[in-house]
Amino acid sequence: MYRIFVVDDEPIILSGITHLLDWNSIDCTITGCFRNGQDALNAIATTPVDVVITDIKMPVMDGLELVKACAKEHPEIAFVILSSLEEFRLVKEAIKYSVCEYMVKTELDASSMAMVMEKVKKEVDRRHALYKGVDERAVDGNPGLEGLLSNLMLMRQIEPSLVLRLSKKGLLDGHAMIGFLIEYPIGTLDTDWSVDDYKRLFEWQKDVVGKILASLFPDAVAVTPQVSRFCCLLYYVHGQDPALWKASLSRLGQRVAKASQMVTSLSPVLVSTAVHDGGGGLEECRHEMEARMTAFYLGKDDYAPSPLDLDGIYVRIEQSLKSKNVNAFSTCIRIMYEAVGKHDHSLSQAIFMLRALESAVRAGLGGAGLGDDKAISELFASVPFISRREAVLQVLDDVDAAVGEQVREVTGSPSSVMIDKAREYIIAHVEERISLTDVASYAGVSPGYLSKSFKKVMGRSMVDYVNSLKVERAKAMMARSGGAQRVSELALALGFDNIYYFSKVFKRVTGLSPSEWLKTQDQA
Image (cartoon, rainbow, N blue to C red; front, side, top):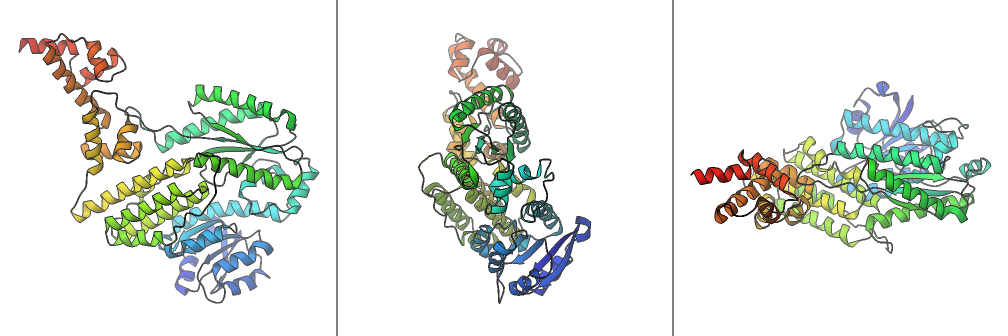
């Protein structure tokens, strides 16, 4: 049974959380409720507790001070922060001290709390194994110490006791980290990629890398990344000879690239650290991998990290949506867009920003009576797959377009600017090969979002719309030439790859092949 403290200066919140769900049904029990951080800290000194759910702003000692006080003396305790959107700056500070989860008070309900607690219980098990000196038993299917190594990127600090245990087992001799960073394919006019498609690709890619890695590095341990679960595969290896390291990596990279091309058609990028020895090298190894991943995310090796400085923006977003002020909302999104594009930052900062944005959008639309949980979830569904800064910017563009459109629909000023721009581009380039990426870029949204929105507004897919325009242009060209223009010339002139596909599209639209259509014109 997981023991829980709840800390909040508002009695209604304490009572609400206590009765929010059947805690026993999820193997939890609330063993204490407190009105400030100091009372909770006093109780922690004498009473065993696994999880603390705490508000941030409280008298005597606030939640952030409580988290800081426990970080050193009680690192085994898992914290869940309760906040309002105004307090996201403090939430960001608390995360530095290994807070597990945060929840926005306006979004508290039984299902969300139960989901959070499932994650927190796993973190409690991990921390108990790390800080309570659990024997070398299996953790997540791995031997004890290797199970702890799998959490290397998640640890706030690497404890001397862990280093000693790793050293005794020989796991610090010649150790290094290997990573494969993944970019997913974007949609085309003919193919739309869904979240389920990406998850399936990830599992295939994970299987490919795992099999090859096991043949070259049999003692490799999978490491859990800090953010974006589906954008990278990380591994810890030991017993490596620095003189042979580059050659080993080269073989690994070549074999993974070849197998990936055949199985997933993805091109995962191999990144790695140098080979290190000893406990000090463990921390250095982790920093090196974080640097490699940040360089990949930013698209450059030389960078100077700086904060995104977006404190207060989430409250403005919530208020602008509650008042149905589209211009104010778009201004906030543009500020975020410029910050992401201008400042060098880590992927974890970007993911935190997007999750905070999602909470603000939910709160704002809900306050305006426009809440649609499914639609909002779909809008942010790509976040776990983000590996590049450009993808973050694209999400911001999509949110701006989608949320703005939703608000305009109910304020009596619906806008189809995005679709109008897409149609404008298609008409202007109908005699060329048209890609969904180019149309989306012109419209200022992502390919996936444009594809879904186009079908919703126009009542048919974009590929059908493009093909119908091309066929109409082909008919006009054939009529002008009196049938003298060859089908192969028509196909080439209209941007088709081959005659077969052009004829297939023509017949799908008209019900006739190009030659059959010409005969109907002669008869007329």
